[in-house]
Image (tube, rainbow, N blue to C red; front, side):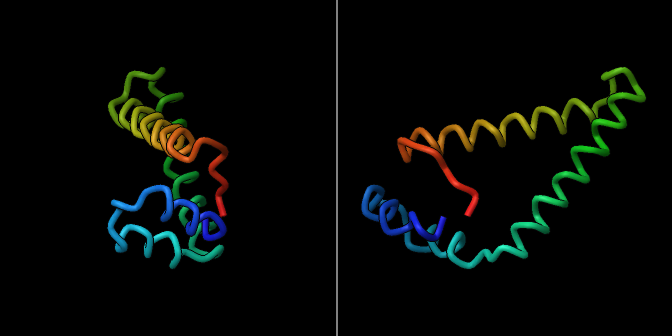
Length: 87
């Protein structure tokens, strides 16, 4: 992300500076913790879904949230007109 910030700032000039400061401040350790935490949440929801045969609200909500999160990544790729690397 840091490698592409100058290009993104140039392309999206109307985005406030505060938005760009967030990605700049995330280091590899914080990213690993966030990804690990999401993996735990998704695994717990998957286990609950397996237990209930997919009928539990927690499982469905987590699945929908994770799917929407994926759509955000697709929108980022479309806005950037290319791959959106993790780092």
